[in-house]
Image (cartoon, rainbow, N blue to C red; front, side, top):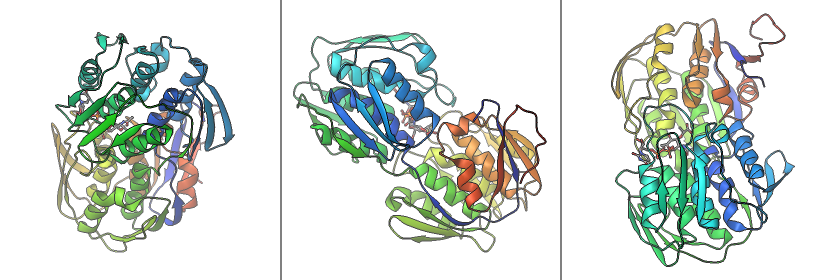
Length: 431
Ligand code: EPZ
């Protein structure tokens, strides 16, 4: 993989066969920093091979963790000799989840100095709820936009933390610190995403005492002794959803394996509304769309609502559905930037703030397009698979952040897609 790689896609072929889903990115990037709290050896399995995970592992090593790869998806992490030190911007700007180092280091050392996080650009991404939570646990926070966030606490004390907005990041970050706070912490209006539950299960396996993860009230009895453990990360529901949508959009027939189908209920319901067939096998599902599908109206929201991280992919599907559809983005201020790329391909979409109105077209045409961010990038692949002709997708580094072996997985489903590196110069025709 090189920076500047592009994907070249010869579209128009239905996907067929089976695909196996990797471990969940957004669980992995929380669980890996949570090993800091163990002060011992953890073995983490089903770790996805993606660049966000590699960056998180590099940051842990920089802090003094010993990281050993036992196989490509299994890591042993020893945080015994970790030192608390500043995590610089060169590292944190590479991924949003670097802010989980704050909660984990605050819990372990009573202090953290971590530069502001990077991540996908969906407009303003405040962290006020994270900081409010830390302050309620007794920490002092010094923070200016785009600067080092400095947090210290003589002692963390359990507290009642009510979030003004449902936030995955704030829920996870406060859980990380609260497991080391004295007494009871009650998080109200907590996020309920599967990765929040996965992190809570991991922390409990290390010795923490957390109840209620997956509901909007999470209770944590803190200051329990924590030790290393073995843990297997859940499957990635967004990766699974991406392949499900790609299967439907190409009128294919695909078995998606290694999933927890319960995590995908909102997507499955919407695909069925469109007339797509979805067979649910619990840890697999089969998606087929032999006939033209109908449009639908989607509104994204916190779990169990329709996931914002599947919104761009679903917009591609709706752009070739019959009739009128709409997509309302209920989480992020600015997550329709990619629509300009779909317009180049002949889609008929008009965006007004957080609302997109879609008139289905018969087909998309190939174009040279780019990935604006991770999920928009996945949507561009689906658009390329659907379109007639050769589509080139640029800026695919964004996609590598969160999709393991994306080219190989799509090729196994019969897609004509290949990665082309800028050097040495080669003719970019799809095979
Ligand atoms: C997580 O981001 C995910 N990232 C995102 O996935 C996902 O889009 C998002 O949750 C929503 O599901 C990771 O897990 C690493 P939030 P996060 O805090 O935690 C507002 C992907 O593609 N808010 O739940 O940063 C915020 O502005 C990525 O995998 C505050 O107002 O999202 C947004 O409107 C992209 N104050 C809403 O809450 C805060 O302190 C939800 O954000 C925090 C958030």
